Image (cartoon, rainbow, N blue to C red; front, side, top):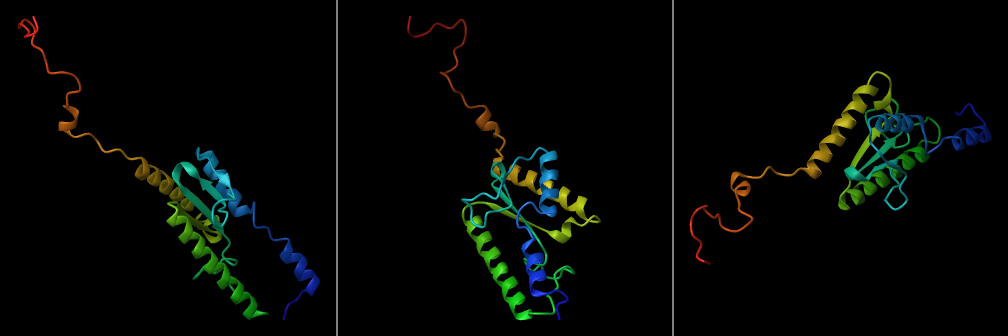
Length: 171
C-alpha cells in the first residue's frame, strides 16, 4: 500500500522533470567541455532527442532506468501498488522509444542511449569517455577520405610533357 495520500503522490510525480535532469546535465557538461556542440530537444526530429549533434549525425537520449524500463537494472523496479498501470506505462514508453529510434535510423541518424545507471559515480567517467570515443569514431567513419592510389597521384592534369631543346611542330 502507498504511504502517501493521492494528493501527495500527485504532487511528487508532477515534480519529476523530463528536461534538464541531473543525468542529462552531466552529459551536456562533459560534451561541451570536450568541444562537442549540440542542440537540445530538437522539435523536428522524432522523439525530441535530448541532445542532437548535427555534425556527427547523432542523437543522444539520456533515459531514466525506471521510466524507460531498463532491463536487468537494479534501479528498474515496478512499484508494489497499481502494478498493471505501471507495467503498461513502461511498456508504452519502451515501444515508443523503439519506434523513435527506428525512425531516426531510417533518416540516417546514429542513436545513442545513455542510461541513468551508467552515470552513477563508479562508472560515470568510463561511460562519458566511451561516449566521446564513439562520437569521434562516427565522425571519422562519416568523413573518411580514402588515400589516393599511386596511379591517381601520377595522373597528368595539363598537356603532354615538352622536352626542352626539342623543336616543336608548330614552328
